[in-house]
Image 1 (cartoon, helix red, strand yellow):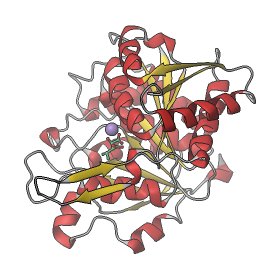
Image 2: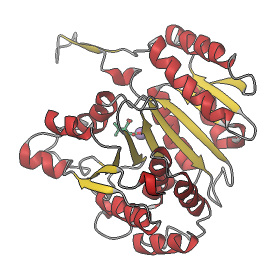
Image 3: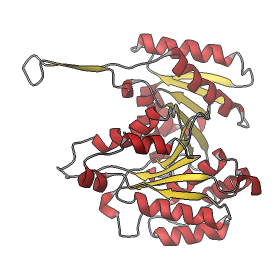
Image 4: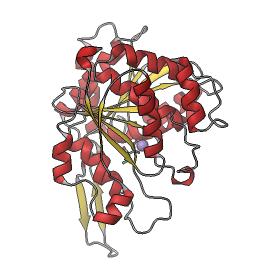
Length: 340
Ligand code: IPM
Ligand code: MN
């Protein structure tokens, strides 16, 4: 893979178990013989407490120059009162998603043995820059008896269409191409109607893809009762956030769930991170499951064009047969290496 040598990757280990799982994943990438040029950035709770900011403009600009960003986890420890709730998440993760136009959050799942979705693979394609995450809304008469709080969901034709198109492209690659739109069109009539029409329009260009629709509440039942129904789920930002935690639970636990925050137009770097959080309670104990970070590294390699290495790595994760409840981070990483 000579021509792809030296891709520049910014590593943002972050908080809690973030630095441990990113280190484990990057050691496996090095084992594959993929020579990435790594630059480490200190972001997260400790940095905020020291310097008073989460991600400054200069760093965001610098990050634009990388080929990819590899992130561990951010978030304060439970009970931490020094950091306002959500500040790190919005200040880092959402800032990067919006600032770098990472408009697709691609989250592939594969049911590990013993899970409800055992052996089945499916993916959630979550719109990543709009919906209720866009920050539309505000507050009137704050802290009075007549306080008003609104938080709108922003859905643009442009934003919905580019996400839906990506989802169809992924669905078309499946052995049995299948895409399910998940929304709440019976109640969220304006946004739901836009999503429905866009899916119908884009579907015309993908005649091989079988398309259906589920309300989000019903999808929560089906994900548990018959996850095999799903191939690619396409959905809005908030539904995608919630469904991907549920999908993590039915496929063996959030400790296995990988994600790619993608800018498919490639106008800048994409960002790869495990779906799980900082898990401060086990940080430093060596007990964190690195498989989600390793699977996220595989998504990163694929995006960077190391197709063979990415395939080897994701196959090794899929075939992993140890019990992560008893194996520690080192042991999981070592056993995964044997599979490479
Ligand atoms: C995720 C996380 C984030 C989200 C938080 C940390 C802002 O839950 O990546 O799923 O809501 O998108
Ligand atoms: Mn989430």
